[in-house]
Image (cartoon, rainbow over all chains, first blue to last red; front, side, top):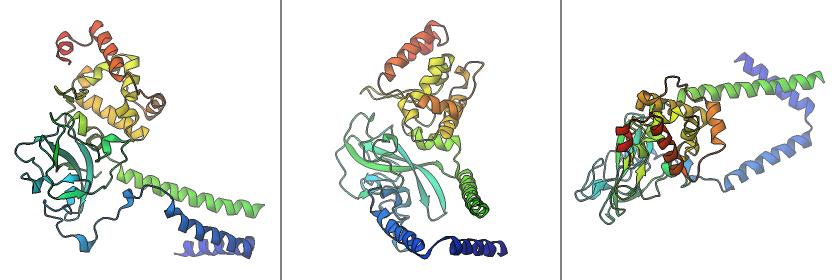
Length: 173
Length: 162
């Protein structure tokens, strides 16, 4: 740690001999104000949403819970509550051929997976187990990475029923 | 003056160190072209790139055993990197080139010209400055007709197109 000590010392001494007290106070003030104002700026904060905390692990293994790890970017109704499963559509609905694909972290094995969110279409809204999570969801001007749009295109009917989350691969290098 | 210079050099070192750390981190988190495809293309073009053609008019262009034909034309090489899905993908130039080359070589290698050269990031950056917004289908149809007339797209493939 010797080099770090000398680096710090050199830096501090330089500050002490080159920077006046008033200038130091004024720049400290700018930092203090700047740091407190920055989070107020209207930037997208959805991306920075905190992952579920330890206390919030209930249902992390339950496909009918919005907390289920695979549903980290699901926006809609959970098919497992509507007569289907986490990966298959309920009877009477059609699995949409177009999907939006995201990644979810599985806290059980600590790995990141690529998840395909297929909408199930052809019946009215299921209405049970609504769920809205937005990890890595992009604004609608990146339509291929947005979960707000109706992904029933190409399914024969635009009537949205519910959404499944299927693993399609690992998202690790 | 010398002191000033020395002082600035510290900052330069600090900057370089940070830059190096960011680069190493980026390398560690770099995704393979297959993963880039899964995350950015697969949702619509399908796992194997077969695209989609539905009676309700929904269509996603076919990549599998097809997209390589466009590389026989200089305007086709530009076209593939100017279509909205590529030009507005949100991927940077390096990743776009990486995933495009991967698609061409794994899904449509047999349709590529003999002298095929992979896309470079610089090339993508250049083409991206003039993305196609309108008239994508029309431009595509003109090129397909041309490729068919030149005998590059065989009759049976041409007939199977929607």
